[in-house]
Image (tube, rainbow, N blue to C red; front, side):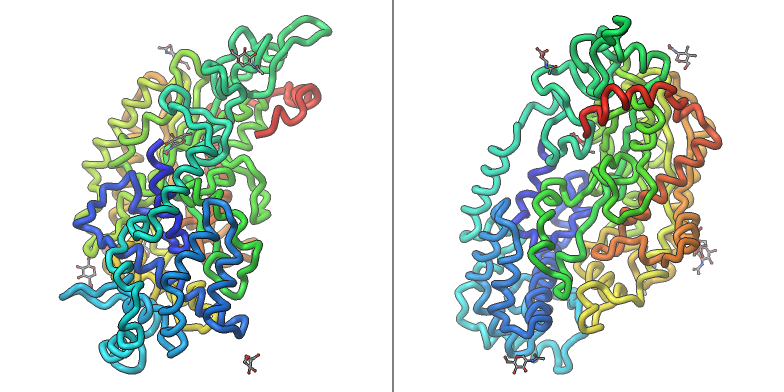
Length: 575
Ligand SMILES: *[C@@H]1O[C@H](CO)[C@@H](O)[C@H](O)[C@H]1NC(C)=O
Ligand SMILES: *[C@@H]1O[C@H](CO)[C@@H](O)[C@H](O)[C@H]1NC(C)=O
Ligand SMILES: *[C@@H]1O[C@H](CO)[C@@H](O)[C@H](O)[C@H]1NC(C)=O
Ligand SMILES: *[C@@H]1O[C@H](CO)[C@@H](O)[C@H](O)[C@H]1NC(C)=O
Ligand SMILES: *[C@@H]1O[C@H](CO)[C@@H](O)[C@H](O)[C@H]1NC(C)=O
Ligand SMILES: *[C@@H]1O[C@H](CO)[C@@H](O)[C@H](O)[C@H]1NC(C)=O
Ligand SMILES: CC(=O)N[C@H]1CO[C@H](CO)[C@@H](O)[C@@H]1O
């Protein structure tokens, strides 16, 4: 249960919007190679920008605007309290600086949340001030010269280490600990709690006091007495004495869906309303606590394992919901084994969280979708960090051997290729970034370059103005996809068959355009990198259709008893 803590420790930083997609527990960024203050600087610039823009939108003072921002935040996770503490400490300086027309870059450099190290470039989101940078910064420093807050921000890589926040950080940790039925996850990976890797991530536990009851298992004694596989089908038909599970599911070849993925698979999403002053209201942050306790992921509406209705209103369903529709005996059998920052090179560190017993459980469809982090990273020179085809080959073979010894016979594994990420730059670079829309002053090109300068980009190599680099990254991605394809066509395993599918972003874009959409609408607006909910569902749709056409055995047959299951069990206990 280590992973959730990581993001929670930076909860006070929320505000401080950590774009921790690649800097995650799963990646091996060491502090010496990454700019430790990059995320703090990014967060500071985002928050100060929001304060400034709220004042502009509401024609209010900076002070009122800070109060307004805090008042919008929910009490949960001490978000509101933390916000008030932060403005108490830094508010007076921010007011003074913003009132003399300094912008967020200047404010954050003055308060030392952003630093320019000797010999390093100056990182800024907004166009540089008209007067020379040094002169402006000096002027700003004079304004807050004697501020007591300065000594706190200086060492601010971990905001919980700030003395005035240490207490609240403790409280947050305690609150979360007490609110979650924490268990030894190794012995029981299923949960009745939604977030913190609970049932938003894998099918809900239907009997928390019975370790042998969980989604995906073969039913125990045809579930006469209890729903041992949590699919909502159990008991005996009083008319003929036959157990329902036997009557409705025997021979229907139930199966689960397991995603081995990265932040895209888990649906990383930062709501644009959290940083867009003109759209901000009390409603904007309602879902923030849930998002934070899901590591800013939304697996419950993702393309592979989503089980809730889409927020965007698109009619396409996730792979899981389609499998469930095809055979209601598959109810709740999904697992999202995905992590921010996951790649072929670090999957071995968390693959054990996959839960499947080769003998006790039903077969599963595994989608291996490490779609970016093998070529994406935030380093100043990203190329040497990229996975080579040789390294990919050896790590994927290791993964497949692991799967072969942990999956029930009759399972299926689909290796998903990498995208050609040039569409990111091509479609976004000259559009306005959310923080730049109000004053038309920041484009995605500016935003990308700010991230690269801070070395916190989730993908320097595609989110870059350097065409040679983007081209080279696409070439490498293609080589890696070819490696996956070769493995799929040349290797055989005893417990599963193996397939390869291209990551069809081009086709998805065309489909979207046919419906009157624009390509940029398929990308997460705040991070400018991840496929958004619509894109994920369209990708799932393509993958489903492809599998149905070429390898129908993977999906299994339609269960003729579906209508009866609905009649007897209704929504099967929901999700
Ligand atoms: C903004 O507020 C100031 C002072 O309260 C007022 O003089 C000004 O007219 C307002 N501007 C707009 C556009 O409402
Ligand atoms: C849950 O499991 C326990 C222990 O096996 C069992 O006694 C109980 O009846 C089960 N509860 C339900 C609702 O099935
Ligand atoms: C695994 O299942 C396949 C059919 O799906 C069967 O041909 C094969 O014999 C099984 N292997 C083992 C070891 O049971
Ligand atoms: C662009 O990227 C390539 C490949 O990493 C690199 O060799 C080159 O120096 C970069 N060009 C600029 C202007 O940074
Ligand atoms: C992209 O890379 C390929 C192969 O590395 C090369 O042939 C091609 O000229 C490059 N195109 C551009 C625009 O850099
Ligand atoms: C990636 O896409 C761009 C733009 O569509 C194209 O020019 C380039 O050749 C593609 N690269 C690869 C390796 O397919
Ligand atoms: C990759 C990953 O984090 N997968 C998670 C899926 O959910 C379980 C808990 O339900 C976590 O333990 C896994 O880490």
